[in-house]
Image (cartoon, rainbow over all chains, first blue to last red; front, side, top):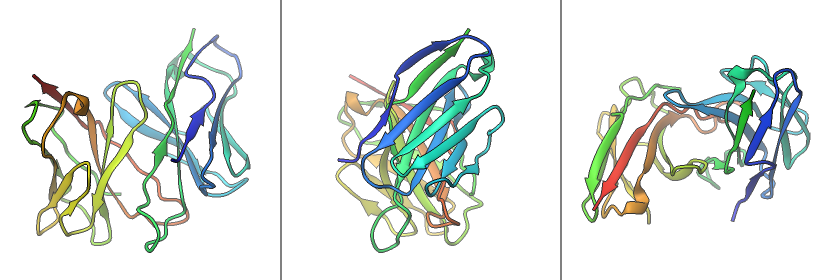
Length: 117
Length: 113
């Protein structure tokens, strides 16, 4: 089974702290994604990466950065955490789509609930 | 990616079929319809997807109208464990170099005894 592991289920940080959220997948997937989920807003894409050292902005990249130094690991960085970044963060991965080989589905981690005080 | 419209919530009795509708009137010819669900405190889980033909797997059936402007996810015999938020998404899975999903707010399905 595909496994996407997020380093922490729950974090509490203070305003201004630098925060790292780590995500590791074990299926050699090319694509990795970071979403945040807030009540009433659904899942919103922050950043995604389709290869090592490659990244693209999603719909709400402001206040975030990412790092993909190894294929299996995708990190979300909050350079200076703010209270409006209190949220559930979800990491996902998928294989680079091939019509013959796969469905293009995303596999999600369990989520990291971040509280910024 | 085309936008979708889903009812915010639905109820279903256990053992009955749950029919979850989705409107995607602006869908383009090469966009697929995907369904995911999210059980409380977990990440979303893929259910099924289709282009224009009806699809069935071990979890659900997907019915897409002939004009492809709407679809229905069917859980044939809903159980309490099917209580979740269900997301309908349309996308071109091979678009560009990364096929991102854009989630809306979904339908909260409550299965009751």
